[in-house]
Image (cartoon, rainbow, N blue to C red; front, top):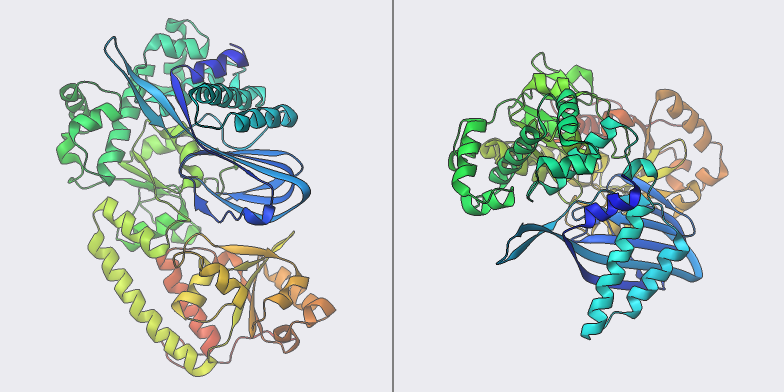
Length: 560
């Protein structure tokens, strides 16, 4: 199967609806903050430099750059630069796939996935010409509507065709099977049969079925059924749909047949499932592991920040921290954990569905759009521990108020900048991650420019950090600076540097020795138990008073 037939097959039975096309000529006008997009969004940058942060992945912009965001993904523009010829094309569209096709009616359902996303390869000149054709067809006439559809399909087909061969054309049987797994994950709600899957894989149906079972230990149709059942469970855990609607959403036209298959699969009728206790919860993200433990739930398998937090009952999972990282853990580990639910952040959701979507329902709890309290409340809602979440939030709020009073009594109310030092860059943090403890719990003030960024969003959401240079630090006036380094050796090296470098010495806080050196690895986790422990450390460091012992110690400031 060649690349042309691959993308033609994917687009078969689809409708594309153009939502909006904007051409931005003034880069300063395009102020994308880290917000979730509602539609499939193509961003095409012409003669533009800088960076984008798509979810947790940074994408450099050089000359002509094309990116595709799926609904629910977030994007933030960082340090855009250009000239009078710079352009940004922002194309938003929805994709619908045929779910029912009879003589009397055709039914289309919106599809939120796509075979590719993020930074894409393309012929920049040809892509720009097609964008211009689409822009010229934007208007109200029916003739132009026909042209808009034609040009939009051509654009989508072009980006599918232009991707590296390994993405669209499998090189071996395993890759062919993986392509059909991805298709089932994306199109589970549509009419799928063995012949169609074998066609996608480029194999005879009998051979395809045999190879699939060797790889996945179940037939393709058994796999598809399990994917559909898990998707139904995901929906039931976060909403209360009518069974008729639910069956249609997961690919079953007969709601009674669906209900029977569901009960055979998990032992409960769909109407009972959400009320039954969940067992063997797996966490693919270490902040959410912390949340589960906070709620009194010991996961059967989980990603941990430190092995010291590993419980005897829990299998430790080595998983990627970012979407671009490789997924190396095998299916057997998850099969042995026998999960009833898998929790994760958005950055691993697509890979989780690809590798283990048939094993258990997978629910992604939004990361950037919610703060730590909202994370806890949403997870508590899913696992039936709402009162535990309420109790923890109330207790933490009380502890934070008491801690703030103690710090203010001995440390005052200075302005504090939080700076993470990395090998290639510096970042100033807002009120998430390490910033939560200092800015939200202890109510210390950030530099005014950081405060303006924080105030553009709901408290504790979206804005995480700004990239800066030592020369920029004078624009972020603060009474104190907190430095976070990867190792103690790097802290010693930085301390020597800032006390000898004229650029650093221009900052009043550095000149007067008002700075702290902390280890990033200890302060990075943005989750309830971690925040509670870090609050105590912060109070001890800033006020010389332990939350538990209430005894004075020397202020832990590293002087030059």
